[in-house]
Image (cartoon, rainbow, N blue to C red; front, side):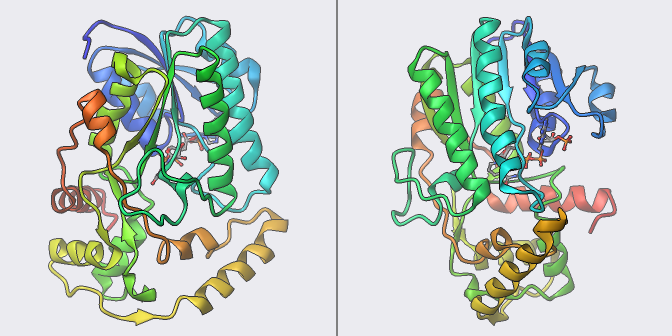
Amino acid sequence: MSQQTKRVLVTGATGFTGGALAKKLIERGDKVVALVRKSANVKPLEALGAELVYGDITDADAVQRAAQGTQIIYHIAAVYRTAGHPDSYYEEVNIQGVQHVIDAARKHGVGRTVHCSTIGVHGDIEEIPSNEESPFNPGDIYQRTKLAGEQLFAEAMANGLPGAIFRPGAIYGPGDLRLLKMFKQVKRGFFPLFGGGKNLYHLSYIDDLTDGIILCGEHPNAIGERFILCSNEYDTLKALTATIARQLQVKEPTLSLPVAPLMVAAKMCEALCKPFGIDPPLHTRRVEFFVKSRAFDNSKARRLLGYEPKIGTDEGVKRTIAWYEENDLL
Ligand SMILES: NC(=O)c1ccc[n+]([C@@H]2O[C@H](COP(=O)([O-])OP(=O)(O)OC[C@H]3O[C@@H](n4cnc5c(N)ncnc54)[C@H](OP(=O)(O)O)[C@@H]3O)[C@@H](O)[C@H]2O)c1
């Protein structure tokens, strides 16, 4: 990996993954420009010395301003964690936002643009493990718009845009709040495994992932390619909760409940909340967590990029718990 200072744009740098990536890039000497919204907490980025450009990914001019003079763009921003939006908002951010990034990269002749997709574009996999060439099967508006954004980006690469696409698994590690609820419930001794927790779950540890993202931004072999950037191992959701319990030194979850009534409740919640723009307390993607299997082969990234995930699930869970405890979250 080259140690020359570069000026790079990171979108989504106020979020978990983009924030960790921006930090790593700055620490290794790169100059990071972050496209940020006025409503976001920019203190960590300011403290790191990132250059802030205020604007929204849905605003083509703002993206153009942010991309000016950069050599690499890491496009990480997406609407993801919140579920109370109309479908059109997912389209604006996860599809049109990608077009704005492509246009800005072309206009400013950016040397490399890296697009963040998700293994979720494959939906509930049939082939174990799946890989970059496995069929797409997105299951909800988030996954459908992420797939459409990825395809838009792939088309741009086919038409000469120097870039790469990566698909992470469930991203976790210090700084993540999405899996906190599961850790809390396991600690409290009440984490019902809807459907028995038999589905396969594939994680991406944040520090390994950001290494992989930078390889996508810098390795010559990455150009024009799509990569799965998951950990080396996957296991059932039940096994993951057992690992969390072991690291917390509590009893592992064993209560198994049927999933169908929960899915009905989630659909009702979504139908009631969405028209009012409220984030539903329970939504179908949360329930699918207990049902859909995700298990992938990361050997393409290992072979072409030298991607080398270092943190196994035991160690990753241990570090995540340590961060939750340090921050009084658990
Ligand atoms: N987390 C996972 O398990 C996972 C798994 C696979 C793929 N991914 C993908 O990984 C990426 C990062 O995920 P994450 O979990 O780190 O997300 P996150 O913590 O929710 O961060 C999302 C980032 O996107 C920004 N953003 C959202 N809408 C925007 C808009 N309209 N204009 C500008 N910025 C906007 C957010 O800014 P604000 O701070 O202003 O909200 C935030 O910085 C996403 O592309 C996601 O699809 C995530």
